[in-house]
Length: 364
Image (cartoon, rainbow, N blue to C red; front, side):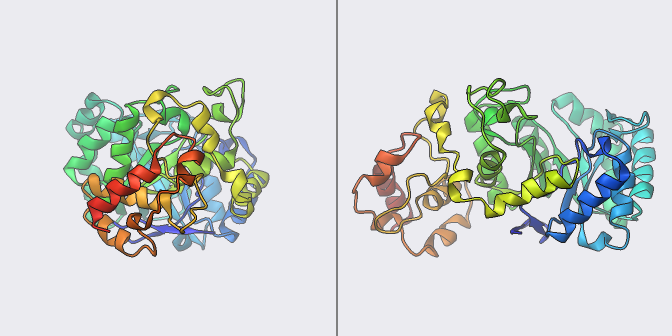
């Protein structure tokens, strides 16, 4: 397992976590077996915006006695009164549901208490007006909630809430379809979405990724907006390469799903390579480095994707980016202009010219 640090909280988080969209469809035996397998292989993070109420009991049974080894995202606004997922900003319902979730999970605290699924300005206004935000902040003051997060599909709304400086983690839908404006939750332009990712990186706010497969649409050539199926591993790698991302949360149902996700770490680099996107991405992706490193190997050993990432973060205002850049073994100024990367880039980035601009920016 690989881990990344949420800089705001200090938590070490497995880069693959657990989504819970489908696990409520499984029997308790199947679910507990899957959760034990995930834990045994180092997965330590789970989102609990689930499709069905049974999920909470499954987690409570699986991790009783192991609670301190798991990190939970619990959503203040998810409503399971009917046994299925619902959404509310009513304070009385939120309080009742949080108390119920804690009982089912057999825990007395929440690692990440989430402002849940706000996608419009009116949602955020209701969340505050109805007292739900105040309740969440009070729970943090009491120590019941250790950290506060935000779940949204809308970049502009995320920016608004981040400006208030209460969120230490962002749950956001990241996949090639949404980033290039295909799909129900493809909110915001490509540039707006990338600015949000860079802001999170700059401010140390970890991103946990929901819907990495666009609800499965990207995995089927008949439903993929690109007319070609991507693999789970391509989608996971795509999300992990975005600034700010600490963990990707694919949904699981059983132990076989967990085993398939764990195969990501042993997969050859070619199976994670999503550079095929360069053959069918829209015009607003052309000329922009997505850090896929398909241009490698560089004859002089430049880490071209990382050099671009630190430059983009620096331009977005990340004051730490220059320090990270300095620690690289090779810098943009070491580029010999051979054009190898230019010929290989699927997104038509003129990297040899970009290296000159980056070298001028950082001074080497």
